[in-house]
Length: 182
Image 1 (tube, one colour):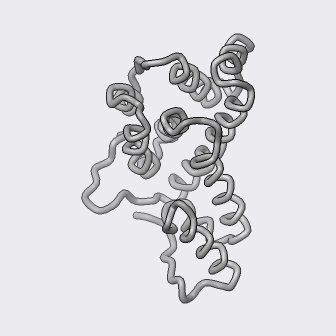
Image 2 (cartoon, helix red, strand yellow):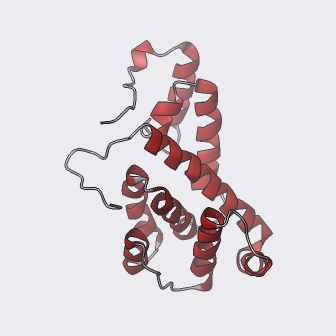
């Protein structure tokens, strides 16, 4: 059972309403998932949604790569809602269905390009070992550039926060949607 508080826009404080309106007016168009939870602390919601907007819409990584990083993070955390929200976006962004399915099932994906492989390897290393080996760091900088690696680490960190929030507050999938990560 979800622990997400119901949002009644008419019952929000002035600060909550300011943040709520900013989120709705932005590219997301609505307040749901972790944003609905963070809205309980409007300063957190405001800062987190700004970081999330950057990570999702404004980073140097193309959607194919940022969505790949998000899927790896969702899988690591077992964050069903995150997977539900981002697997279609990964496909739309150009990540292959076979790679998406391999990540979902915990198999080793085969990628079309070195950039996808590097993003996957960095995401796995940061989640499993909490650091990058020098060879992986060097490879990531060579393939993504230093700025791209910085953006990738930002995406991984932000979506770890998202996953933690989704799991702590047991955010439900829409009615009738079966779990994907088991």
